[in-house]
Structures are given as C-alpha cells and as structure tokens.
Length: 631
Image (cartoon, rainbow, N blue to C red; front, side, top):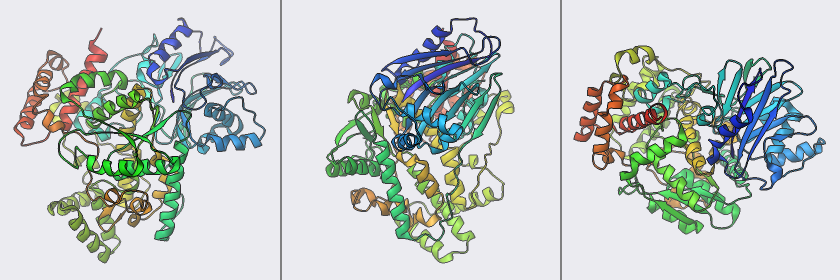
C-alpha cells in the first residue's frame, strides 16, 4: 500500500526530471512513510529523448525488507514497476509462477505482480485478487501499462499535456509537475451539489478539468507516441446461472467464499485490526477474523450522537466485544471541530468529500494510527451484494409482481410490515416511482432533491443532464444492486475510504469486495438476498454460530452516520451562515446566494432537512479556497 507517480514523455524534458518525480512522490508521503524511490528509463523511444520516469513512496505491509523496494526492475525482462495496493492471492500465484520457472529474490507481492506480467502479459490482471493501481514499463514492447483493480479501490489519476503524460495516486502529486494544468471541473461540481453525491463518481473525471482516472477494471496501454488504448479486463457478470441452487448449497458456497476472502485479507507482516459498527457486515468480518486468527483483534468504531441504535450502536458492539474479546476503541466526534477537520481532510482528499459519514471515519482513522494498527478490515460492499438498503425491498416487490409470484409477494409485504414498522404509504410511493422508472418516464436521480436552482442560470444550462450507464441485468433488484456496486454508492465510498485511511498511512481492506464473492452473489435469485421481509438473508443464514444472535437477527439498519442535521442547527450554525455569506462565495459567480440563505433558513426552522446539501456546500467552498484561493 503506497503512493506512486510518474511521467511518460516523448521528448527530452526541459526541467529537472529527478527533482520533479521526488516532488510528486513527496507530496504523497503520507501514503508511504517507510521509504521512497525513483527510476528514470531513457530507452522508451528511440527518438527525441523519450523517457519513462517512475516514483514511489512505500508503506511496508508485505516484505518489510529492502528487497521489496520500488520502483522494481525484473532483471530478466528489463520491465519496471511502481505499484500501489495488495494482491492478496500472491502466494498462490508465486507458487504457480515458480513451477513455470520464475525465480524470486523477495517475499513481496510486487515482485509476483511483475513476474506475472512477464509471464501472462495484461492477462495477468484477470488472475489478481486484490486492490491495485500500478504502472509497468514494458521495455521490450516500448509500452507503459497503467492498471486499476476491478472496483477502483486504489486511485490512479493522469493528465496528458502535449509531449507528456503525468500520473499519480493523488491529484496533488500531478499538480507538483511544473507543466500540470489546474482548473475546476464545473460539470463534476454541478453534479456534486445539484444531483446527489452518489452520481458524482459514475465516470473517470475528477473535480479538476483535464485530470482523469484510469477506469476501474481496466488497463491503459501507452505507446512511444503517447497513443493511449484502454481495455476492460473484467466486468461484473454472473459466473453462471444459479436459479436452481438449493438453500444449503448457496449458504455453504457463500460462507466458504467469505471466509476465504477474509483469510486472504489477513495476510500481512504487520498488525491487522477491524473497523466495527454494530451492523451485520462489519460484525461478520470481525467475527470471522477472530475465528481465523484464534486471538482477540483490535477493533475501532465511533459514537456520533446520543440516539441509541442510530448514532450510538454500542449495545450491539458490546455483544461482539464480549464474544471476541476484542481490544476495542471508540471515538466521539466534536462538531465544534467540524470545519477545521473538513479543511484538514481536503488537504488529503484533493476533492470534496461525499457525506458526513467520512468525517467520523477520518477521526477513526486517526485513532487507528495512534494504536499502531497499519491494516484494517471493513464491511463495505455487503449492502450492495445482498440488498441491505431500505429501497431494495421495493425493487424486490416489483420483481415478484412481474413474475406472477403472488403468494411470495404477499408474504414479503406482510413480513416487511411486521419487521420494520415503516409508514405503509411508502409502498404506494415506491410502486408509483418504480412504474415510472421502468417506463423511462423518470430516472434514478429523481429520487433525491434537486438543488439545481441554487446555481446561476449559465451553470445550469451548461451542466444539467441525465446520466445513464450500462446495466446487463433483467431483474430490477439486480439492476439496482449493480448500479450501486459499479457506479453509485461503492465508487462514492471507495474514494473517501482510500483518502481517509491513507492520510494516516493505513491500509484498508474490504472482504465483501472480493470479485469471486461479487460474481457469486450476482448470479443468485432475489430470494437469497431478501426473504421473509429481511435483507441479506444469505449472510444471516451463513453466520449462524459465528455472530452474536443479537446482531445476526437485527431488523433495523443504522449505517455509520452522524447527526449533522442538528449540528448545523446548533454548534455549526454561525460558521455555516458566515460561509454562505462570505465574499468568496459571492465572488465565484456560481451560486444564487439568496437561495442558499433560504435553504439555510429552512433547515434551521426544522421543517426540512438539508444537511446533505449543506455538508456538500461547506466542502465545495473550502475546496475552492484551498485549491484556487490560497497563494
């Protein structure tokens, strides 16, 4: 888990290349405080002084010796690599490559990745189970390969400027290049404020115009003329049709995959802990890790408010601590520090943060660092694999109705009402919305408040648009889960998760995002996800005897949230007002300030909850100040 940077050029640079690479990597030193390296390869092109320069900042997780130092060069092929991430199945790949005649001098997964590329070319990415962003200089083919993992957990930004392509793990690394261009991307800004955070990360663009990411599940080949070709090596498709699978077979297979996923992600030469809320997902990961390690694990969570079961899940967490003897640590955010902490976070994130959840998780990451736990597991992805959000029930109702399964539909409606005690009008509301959705009379984006009226007219006219993405599934529930997994909630979570943890030199691993588990779950019918009015049926059943029953049978869902709605009415009220009415907001020419004040007043009055919008407004303005106002 590291920070990488590089420059690919077709002409001899007119600046100090070695110093530039050092500046680019040093800007990301928090990603790799344990060492640094630079490699300049002047044989990229036979004309005009073409070159490849790689930089690296190292966080020692696997192979703590200097044999794992990067950039790494394969002495047999001359190929070079700078690599960020972990390939969890590196031991299995190493054994296979060894049988094929490959020799190794280190115990690092980086060397396995480099040898795997030498053996299989770009097909190696299909064999990796992990999270990564990497650059490989293929000396023989005169190409540079940039690649990211299947879900885009590890970042890799690039900007193409004339005779050079610049890349880095973080945008701040690119901006240290003397010829980098720094401009705001108003299309991204508009979507962030007007159309809900979950529709921001649906593409490879960043908040900086001209700076993009290598797409997830892809590799980019760059030739000696800076020609770029991008290929997908993976798509989330069902591995096979499992419509006839029995309950027992599904439970056994799912449990085996999940346990193996956790086992692989426990591979580390440094201590491993867990992020633990009181929910089903993180508790499953923590409990499985405890049983594999056969010893107590260090775990971390937060209490963000007073309301039990919502902002304070200690009742459920305590039951896990009791069963696993976990060495547990809580944090309690102080909203008086909110604005200062956001500003601090933006220094690491480089882009506005999607939701207030990540403010609390940033504070937890700081606590993890204090406790000297360089690797943590988390439960991200369980909701998207196994239907854990409230609206998923309604997509399932629709699927049952369309299939003519009247008895099952009535049973699901009945148990949904019994289990959740929600307003019955929710059923008719969602039924009407879904009907319009399938008839293409509305879009997924319409579920959320539209704040486009806050922007000046020219911004709206240039940037308001519907967003569409491909979806290979026929079941409406599967369509929803696929959208969340590949385009919405997971991409929107992975970006701040990476920046939060790496800001503290911590590696965060997500067992539910094992691609084998995703392929298996997406091959299953709805009934393995929602049954008898409860989501995550398959996880609940597979965790019998593993989880405390209090957690396994829990019917409510909190999510790791914070009472920002109240904070903005009380503790942060004055700061928020001053920000909205600041000279900088007025001078940007983006917003109708009177409309911002009207929304602020509505929120303070308590009639409407605009906390998501207000959080995003704070982030955006502080981001502008940090990146475009500060000298």
